[in-house]
Amino acid sequence: MQTTEAFAGLFCLDCGVDTGADSHRCPSCGGALVPTYDDASLAAAHERLFADDGSPARSTGGLARFGPALPFDAETLVGLSEGATPLLSCPEWTDEWGPEVRLKTEAANPTGGTVDRQMALAVTAAREQGAEAVALPTTGPGGQAAAAYAARAGLAASAFVPSRSSFDTKAMTNVHGGEMNVVGGRYPDALAAFADRRGAAHSLAPFETPYRHEGAKTLAYELAACDPDAVVYPTSHGIGLVGLHRGFSELAATGVVDEVPRLYAAQPGGCAPVVEGWKERNTAVDPVEYPDTIVGTLEVPDPAGGAHALEAVAATDGGAVAVGDDPLQDMALDAARAGLPVSATGGTAVAAGETLAERGAFRDGETVVLVDPVTANRETDLLRSRLMSEGV
Image (cartoon, rainbow, N blue to C red):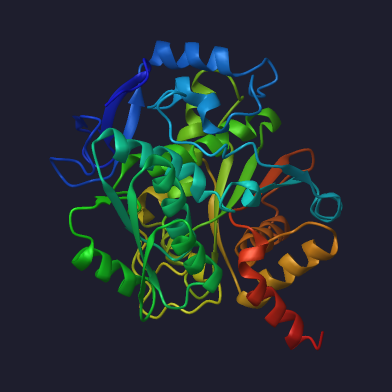
């Protein structure tokens, strides 16, 4: 594999073993792997990448602009100009809650979601390792992103999705040339079908490739300029939280940001294994036996990175909050009426932010970032149905 000067290999989060760049899981214990970097090279990369105010030296070019601090350089990376997404001011929530509230809207990514960051690196790794095809189980958005980036890389792609996934997501996976395998039931059924039928395809499943959560760290790199005190993130497998923790930890170590912000997991009440694990002060999550939420993107009853998500919120003195389906839809609709296009998934972060504010988790003068991981256009059926229940 062609890697950057700073990249030093992979490290197991569970047993601490170092291994090669072409591994999926730890060869010793089967645990999740993360990329590691030479400290001096990473510090030098950050010095080139960031201005004195923490803003990226380049604002365009996709994730390639962060190439020196990633495993793959700009010339190697499979990119579609992902990233550089808007960070919007939220004056109404700022006035109501106390801290300065900003909304990071990932809808501006090429396929409409933050998973594009993950696939840029994961598909690059697959191509560099000689794969001809990639496959993954997904609640929906990952299928379209994998198909798009695989097409860019000249690879075949196959996605296994539950039947309740949105029509638009399934259709766009096919449009990009990917094979769509619709599985009756919920996400665990799609996961089982993936395990049985993916064949020799390179796995892009959460935490089976180290490079999805590494792509997720670039969100932290983009938030460095506002140096947030807290970030609220809608959570399923935990990829986003792990990525944010890694990214901010690297930035804090080299002085780009003052410190790692508090990270908060936001989940719908009908499927909140990370929240329940946090409440019990556990180091691992217990699967939800009967998941039930309208937010299909977050309905993952046994998250692959649940333990690592708990570690991220604990290490940053953050937390985890569950919110009901009605409140999260209402917060998304309230945002839309104020001109902010927020998905139902993103409404989970907003509703959790309001709950945290009521609990006194934020202080005046702080900066709080709410992350909306998918485009609202992908969840119009959820938001419209809520309007119809109100007689609109």
